[in-house]
Image (cartoon, helix red, strand yellow):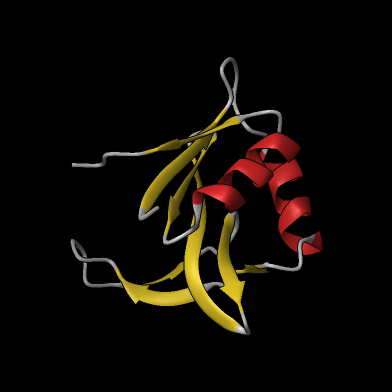
Length: 99
């Protein structure tokens, strides 16, 4: 699955619970903070890695999962893994069309 979404039928996924899962799961790696440039002000800013995880297989980062407004948006993460994470979080995994 190229793009996916993990969401609850009612309510939102808890960021604290998601962050705890990132720290404990063997295939997830916490994304670090990173420096960037605000495209509007051209000022240097720090982008938080909170709620963002890399999906890793064989020591390689092959996808990512990002917490956004109470749901998890996935890129490059297999549906089987999304379903596993959804089950842990009492949520559902869906393919996502972000066009």
